[in-house]
Amino acid sequence: METLNWTAVIVGTVASFLAGWAYFSPRLLGRSWAVGSGIDQNPPASMPWMAMGLQLIALFILALVVGVTAQTEALGTALLAIAAGATLVMAQDAFSQKSTTAIFIDGGFVLVAGFLMILAQGLF
Image 1 (cartoon, rainbow, N blue to C red):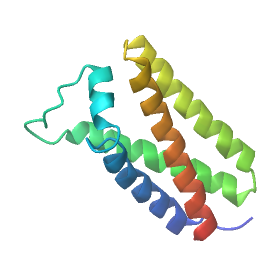
Image 2: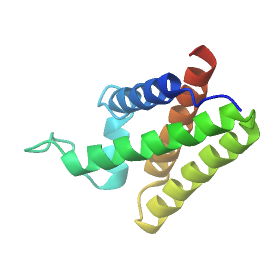
Image 3: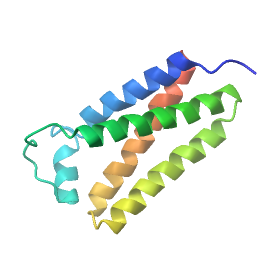
């Protein structure tokens, strides 16, 4: 069995984290997401460090899962893990009574992140 591709895991994590900044920016889906999530559209007084830290940890774990499945040529397993993560986020959003738009924006981000992680495995 090959060694885990740590470069691809780190690149996938960082690329997904940065993609989240763009994805949830006011220029893309941020406004619709904020309205649907019941969040003030004005920038917060301070950076949401806990949310960002948890996001980074979750993205690293997902990139690690993708890396392990790439190592064993189990892309189907990676796709199932990504789909499960997206669905769990969407279910949590539904319980939190977010709008349908916000639910699909959140779930869509998990799919985008998973795609970037798989792409990183292919490129590195």
